[in-house]
Amino acid sequence: MAAPDSSNVKVIQPLDPSVDRRVIYECNFSVDQSVVPEFAAYLRQHMREIVELDGGKLFDRATLCIAEHEGQHDGERYHLCARYRARSRFRLQEYFDKAGDRLRKDMLEKWAGRFEVQRRILVIDSVIEAGGESMAIEA
Image (cartoon, rainbow, N blue to C red; front, side, top):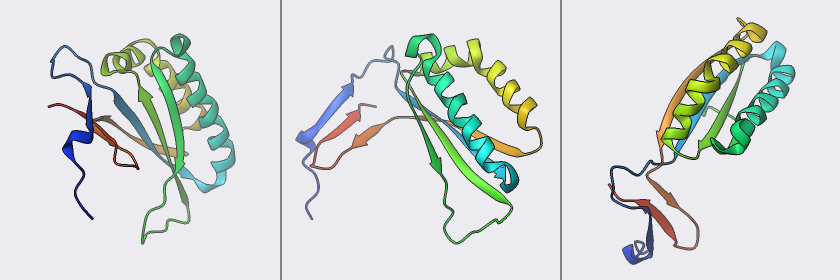
């Protein structure tokens, strides 16, 4: 299979330090099996609340995934991954400043001791799609 032709790569943000890149805010949950249905329902509502903050100006999408760990099985824990696509790194910071602490506190109060979470921020570099079209951010 031939390498993709670089002329098919569209730049989605110009080489300009003032341009704020899009980011994914990812939260990986390890949940006690005994509360999975209730926790997952709560998490879906929590995610909807986050996406709808400020009329949808901070995030444009959230995705909840069941995390499968190849070659590993933990019968007492269930793993979920919530991914939020922020409209920009600036908008993600707005979320942290305006609502992040309140929403994290609410979750901790309701589910204390029944879940663990690890969070990370992923800066989108490139998007590769089927059909040979790619979008890249110049570095």
